[in-house]
Length: 220
Image 1 (cartoon, rainbow, N blue to C red):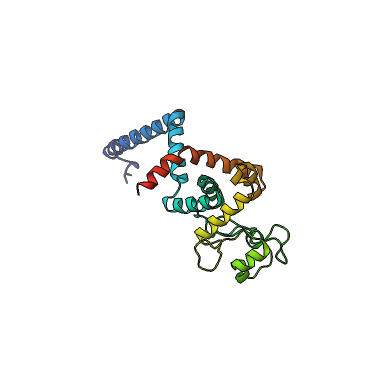
Image 2 (image 1 turned 90 degrees about the vertical axis):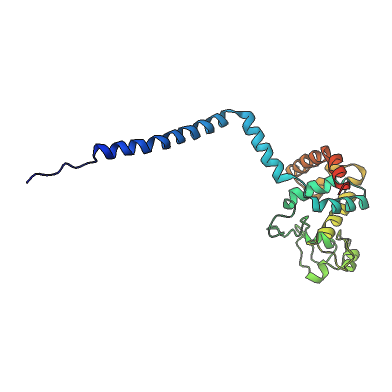
C-alpha cells in the first residue's frame, strides 16, 4: 500500500507566505514607531505633559467656591485649589474618607473640624464624636473647631463642597496664609515636608495661570 506524503502542499505554503507578509510588515512598522518614540525624548515629554494637564486641570465648577471662600478669609484661591488637588484629586477620591479617619472634600480630621477641646479628642484627631456633634455649628463654636456652615443650611459638613472649602480657607488663614506665610500654613494643614512640597508645586502652577483662568471665568 502506498502512503501519502504528510505535510502541506506547495500551494498551501505559498498562500501562508502571502498572508504572512502584510502581518510582518505591520508588526515591523509598529515596532519602529514605538522604538522611535522611546528614543524621541521630546515626544515622550510632550505626551506626558498632555496627560498631566488633563489630569490636573482645575474643574470649572469649583472655581467660584474657591474664590468666595478665599475672598472671605483673605487667602489666594489657588492655594485652596492646590490643597483640593492634593487632598482628594478634586474630590474624585472615592470614598472621601482616609484610612486614618480624615473626612470630606478637604480631608479634615474630626477633632480639627469640631475642635480639639472636644472630650475624647486625642492622638491623630479621629476622636469619638457623635455624628450630630460633628456637624453642629454651635458645638463647633463651643470647642473652637474650624468647621464652617458656608451655605447656611444649619450644618457644617466636611462632605459638602462649600462647607469644606470655607473650613479649609479658615484653617489656612489662621495658620498664616492670610499673612502670606504659605509654607507655614500648608505644613500646619499636614505636617509633612513632602506634602508642603507637593501643595506648593500645584499652588505655583495654578498661580501662573490664575489671571487667565479668572478672565475666562468672568466671561461665563
